[in-house]
Length: 116
Length: 114
Image 1 (cartoon, rainbow over the protein chains, first blue to last red):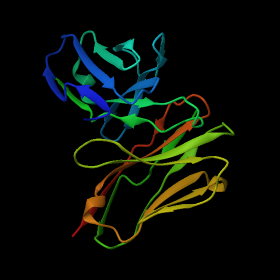
Image 2: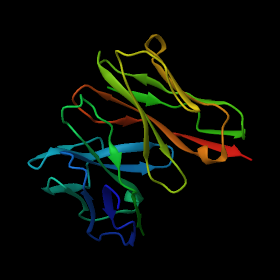
Image 3: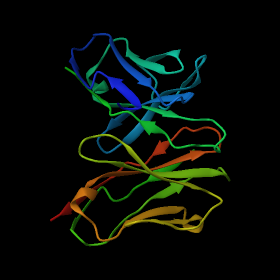
């Protein structure tokens, strides 16, 4: 089983719909992140959370919201989807523990989202 | 602000050739961390290496090697004797101490032809 699980893996929906992407992890990491990937732009950070009560905006948070329901779960919502939110979305986790700062982030397999 | 530039959008070589992927970064932090990730055609992101700014030792792992040079703000990745399975998009990324906000380059699509 994957350590970082994203659901759904693929989603096609219409403009104006509310969409939630789920991420759960079994790695025991305290830090979680949401990124989107667009061709030619690499990955860009949407939101991140260092703990259950901690939510921070990333580079491109407009049009998105998140919820950190538990240490192992971090969901991303698009309240009213628009076509330019069509992208590949990744959830990632990392550990702030005692192995030194800036431990590598571990990514889920991605959610391919298409907004028509 | 932090920035990572991967100027090579696409590279195509024949199997067994050596290939180097370039990564140039910008940061004002004195302590920072550099990463390389691989994204194969299946889409997942695979962590390859992390390098600290205070450790300029080059690293070799099998056919992979990394050359970190602070003087030129570069962290280049070389694959020796490339194989078809090396075909993927490769991302270089940067973060400052404590923040853990990864800034990614645009990625280099590497195609190894048989």
